Image (tube, rainbow, N blue to C red; front, side, top):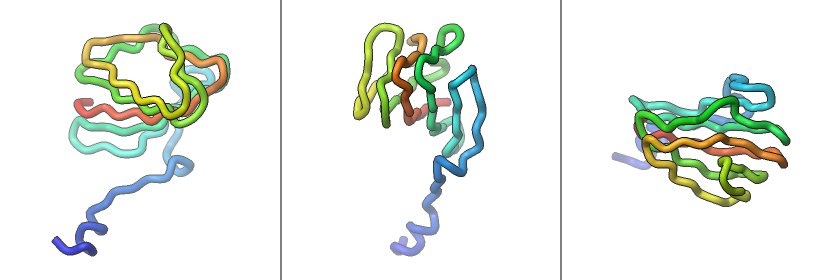
Amino acid sequence: MTTEQQADAYVWSAVQDAPVRELFPGIRLRPLWSAGDAKAYVLEMDANTCWQGIDVHDPGPEEVFVVSGVFNDGDRDYPAGTFIHAPAGSSHVPRTTTGCTLFLFYPEG
């Protein structure tokens, strides 16, 4: 495959152009990419917001990268630059006092 063919196969998306879906007051999800069951999103949480209910990782794991702010999983704080792997079947209650932006990847949906 040539470099040009490889570049033509790339899929890209800009966060500001991704559609916004408000999950809960002050918590927005922006889909960036999907292929089969795998999905990638940006999650934006305003300051002093909390997920309503428990976020269960099913059917597969959740990979999280804290882009900005401080994310709390209900147990501890994760500052910008932190990577979190939540295995399938695990759960937490996402929240933030400062506000945060997360990159989420679901390799199995």
